[in-house]
Amino acid sequence: MPALHNGDTFPALSLDIVGGRRISLPDDLAGSYGVVLFYRGSWCPYCNAQLAAFARAADTLGELGIKIVALSVDDEVTAAALSAKLRLEFPVGYEADADAIAAATGAYVNDSPRFLQSTGFVLDPGGKVLVAVYSSGAIGRLVADDVAGFVRYVQSHA
Image 1 (cartoon, rainbow, N blue to C red):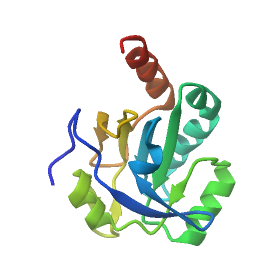
Image 2 (image 1 turned 90 degrees about the horizontal axis):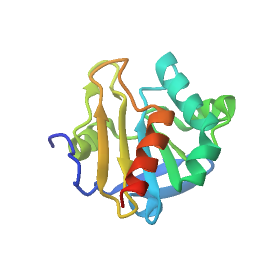
Image 3 (image 1 turned 90 degrees about the vertical axis):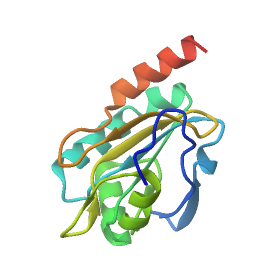
Image 4 (image 1 turned 135 degrees about the vertical axis):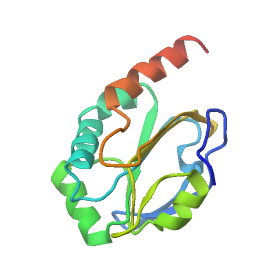
């Protein structure tokens, strides 16, 4: 599938998340602004920095009604260790099917090893894409402070 554009409905994805639950996107974000982050893996320093920044901004984002979900192809043990290390309070999906998610969202996939490149979406409370950020490599990703400012702007112009 080509890239998602502003106004597109985010595709239905079902994810196993650290802690033994399963969530459905965008349904489990309904009624809130949503941020969906695809990260390359726990080994990626840029991904670690991004996830840690979203964790630090959790109070501000929560006050704005923003829920965050992250996912990668990492196995459950690796994703759980990263979540604990970075003290992530938001759901972290694991063992994502890179090809299926790329087909649904247009995300770039690395060939060998197989993983999703950094991709981020900001969704409105109805599950429509407000912003899509696609990276074909290690850098280029959503920034927590930018998301907070953007949602403030959208809310003030609603």
